[in-house]
Length: 429
Image 1 (cartoon, one colour):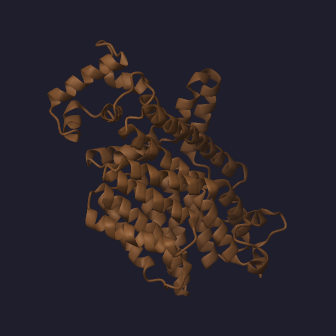
Image 2 (cartoon, helix red, strand yellow):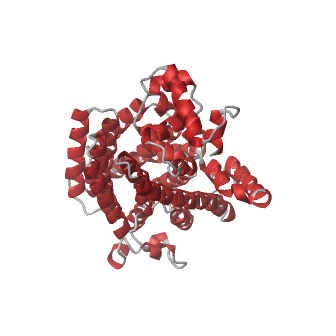
Image 3 (spheres, rainbow, N blue to C red):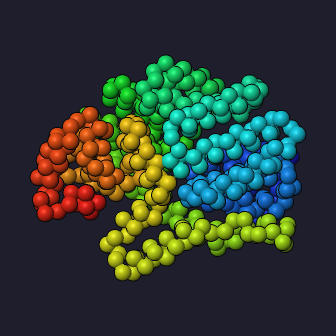
């Protein structure tokens, strides 16, 4: 069997030309897909799907797993509509499986990706939390002797702990932090260990223990670097930047936000290349070979393709705007709606999510001399979202008049004249 000849971490074997699904154990493939998923390595996942799918039975567990990862590829490029189509296909396969363990593990993956789609659409946080608790309960029905039992409970408990910390529900947050600790420590998974220290850091940040927050965030980065998990470093960097802002070390905060910006640009380019890869490799080819009458099931996303042409046009006409265009290209309407909803609900997550959606602006807001305070940066975030004075007053627990006074002081600090619209000026930073 393949399990005897290949380590789960020798995933490049799967991509060799002579490799064929029937010559190996699917467990190797599944573990490698999970490993690439942790690394946000969309290209390797796409290549495995292309290579493995033609040899699978249409209604098999293996096909369900592959189909779920096809859904994730669309999630990766932020197209929830196409992702849902593949999730529905995977769900039909899951519903007909006889093996209970396979059925539950596939259902867990499907449910997590469905929740990701809801997040992308800007669903309310309480709905996301309620769904996550249901998925956690489902994971708890697996055998405690199985790897999946501990893996999914660790992941989901981590997510729930983060949500409850944001909601300032200490009782529930502490409960799920403890579960995360127990389940993570029962496995030797660097991805989970990185997320655990990130959770510790976020917990300390909420308690305004900035030194402890920094210690845990840096430990998470250390593990991520040692085990080559750049996707986790990407998400932790703005959190570290926020710590240094609170410590009023704006120079170091800028370094981390700049690193985040650099990684953000790189990811934006990867996502654009992912679309080109899907088009170039005719991603629906495997299904066409199996069903000549079937429709294309993995078409290039029209909106993404239009975006590529849009970028190419500006590469020629306005090269100085390239970075801004890349950012706009990868900032979806769903993400902006989600960010707006977080602000309206006065969620702490708004301040964590904003740098992910607008990395260019966030980085620039932290490079002014004299530096903006953390409250001034947050104030600019609200103006970027086009919130009127009345709403900003509600979000900041102040009066409309005090908001206008702060706008006046910001004008002076950012050299924005009275003739300029301050909202437009923030957009142009």
